[in-house]
Image 1 (tube, rainbow, N blue to C red):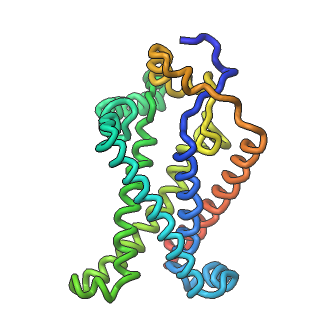
Image 2: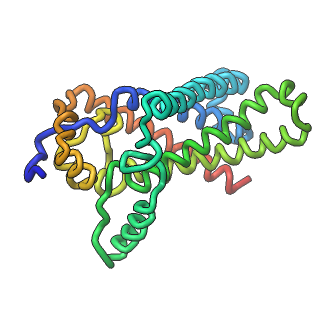
Image 3: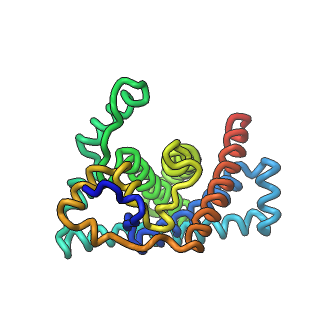
Length: 276
């Protein structure tokens, strides 16, 4: 293992992964802003947002547009997984250090992390993905499926009314509304903290935008992954140049805007929910 690798940069996310995450950021913020405006339509801030957009009809149209775009990204992601698993026979997607599948080590890491929080033991050493990253991933995956299905059932109500009893559409409306509210709160509290606001990364972790991290960060945050790649010689294949200045500034800009919108919606929806 290299003793001093802080000056080198390595790729962590591919360009395709960064583009996909960018699509999710834009469309999720759009869905959150329009969806919460419709959910709390009687509130003054919701009426103001609707007026600025062109009315609640325009808000609904934007909501549907964002839904289609994020659905396309979801389908692409599933297709990519199937292609890699079936065509390329990449079984590491489902088990092993590079898999998003929860594994026994994640439970052990969570236990050790709690002990570390309480000053009762050392911090666990993480591999390619930490347990909270897998939790974030599956929370979004589940939300995409359940919110998406219920949303399309309402959008194409006359079609689904021929297939299911009417009360199922009422249940879909309830599920869509409450699950979407839960997703907004989860992303703007848990995911924002895990990604940017925890002490090691505050106030920003630009890796999902630049795709890069320094060797020092890699060694400190994911020592098991770093050590395995270093020993196999694969680490050098990930070597890259530092992110250009424009990309660093862009990362800051997108993060500030996203977190600002997110926290604003979080406060507005929390107040609206608890004062209903």
